[in-house]
Image (cartoon, rainbow, N blue to C red; front, side, top):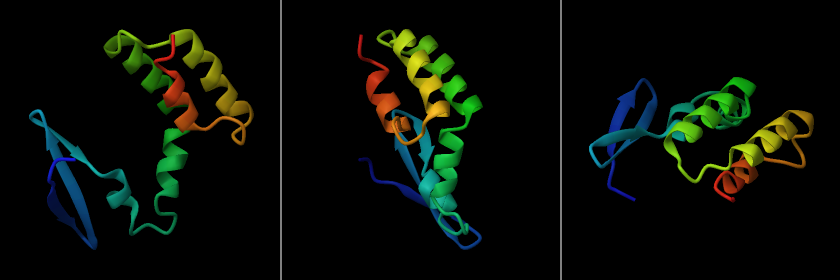
Length: 96
């Protein structure tokens, strides 16, 4: 991983990583001072609108994106969180 810079925001130190002229911030660092902590990321990443957005983004930007598999799995996320996690969904997105 590339060496990062630190951005101080109130009580939080947020890591910024630069790769190929693009900056990325650490979501985990951003949530560390909140009561729910990184649980906020889990709530956001499994939000229906977020998953739909990620599906559209992958379809546009990933030539190997397996849209039918993503569609089936993203619907299952909302039916039963214990059987399918977002990590599983990401692993299957390129499996054609």
